[in-house]
Length: 134
Image (cartoon, rainbow, N blue to C red; front, side):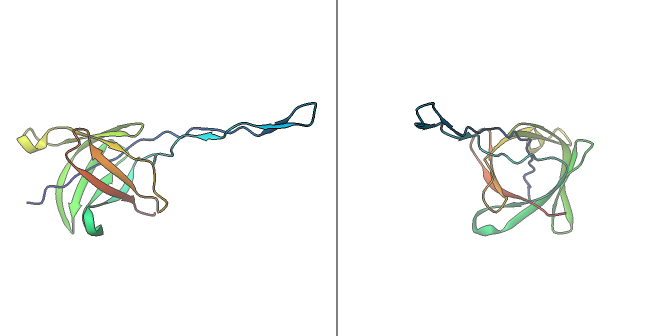
């Protein structure tokens, strides 16, 4: 059976903007604008999970009650609970089998198209995740 990766992430946005200031001598000094990367604030919603070549492996539905359902086509291939803290997200599949242990992921900043890359905490897997429009 196709093993599906579930993921989500919470996110934090921070920006510090500073403008130019003129001194009394009319000499301007500019302060650098510093902006933190914009991580996607992943929460309840539906996300497509793709690998190389842009092939959609699975769809993950994250629910407001902290549960998720993974599907491939019309078939449910996994479910359990999820939690998010900033760019980090963990999924705990239902059951206690070897392939059903909690897995945690770290998400990258958003790409221009709204997708992001999530990487398993041990570095063994990475996928591209795209939120579906509502």
